[in-house]
Length: 413
Image (spheres, rainbow, N blue to C red):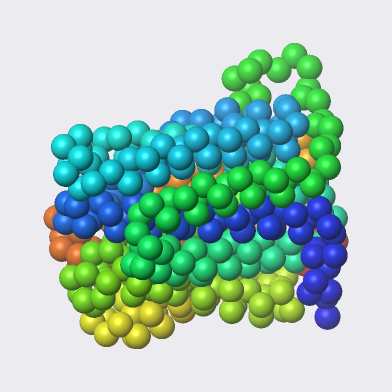
């Protein structure tokens, strides 16, 4: 049996995990506060979806450049720069969110969306720099284990963050919620200081800036396993995510308050971290591609079931099951990306992965808002789940190399 705690024995990797935990908590609490506040003020599902689009657009626009920056400059400093931007955005969001309802409605939601865009810009630099940094720290044979603990850390924050966000909104209000977010970003900045700076490998001489910027795209699109795994997850998240509509589902279908919504938002992460503990001891190194396809299909099926549920705890269980399936796909995708990417391109490939996966969460939120407005809340979720199953079937047919991929064989190459 492999060492389930192998990656955790590396001190710098532990600091990276703690940094990611702080940022995940901050982002999740911020999502709960903004989502609940906007829906309470407007009652508009599309307004919820627009929060995702406001963050995704700058994230996508800056990603190729941020990947190049992460492969050219000190990755630790790039991440710290992104944290400073995140802090500035969080402070301004706190100022806006703490205004009374009349003042917010008088100025409209545009100030919210502009500052959310700044946060999205910051996130565009976070993913490539931190992903490339831990890829340098962890030995190749521990990539699957590190990807598991990376996913577990994200999900631990995704469990605690929404629940804490709901409780803070319900019992302490917007002011305390936004102050906690700012404090967590500061703590993340302090923690990343304990990670040693590393020199970056120089680029090939004579390459144009355009060639350097697009190298990650060319590398990913030239590898069927990488492009297949990223595209599969992107479309699954794009169509299958119902999290953006949780404020509406909690209020209009399940008839619970912000506390109940916070627990629902945490349900996927509870299932995910439970599965993550299993995966830590039994990593999916055999039949990896087949398991990836199976788990994404399971995720889509859970979304269809969730759409029809009118019982709080059944909805909770289905979301938890979807999180368990999603954890395995996260671990597999993270392992594949680290195993198949050379050190000199980690930032740019991580940026492409961010475009495929990170931004799809926010664009998926926008898609969910549009679909909910024009199809209805529950039919829109059914549509998303069915489309996820269609994507799995299509990937099965057109990406045979992914279907037969084994992480174990890649370790030995």
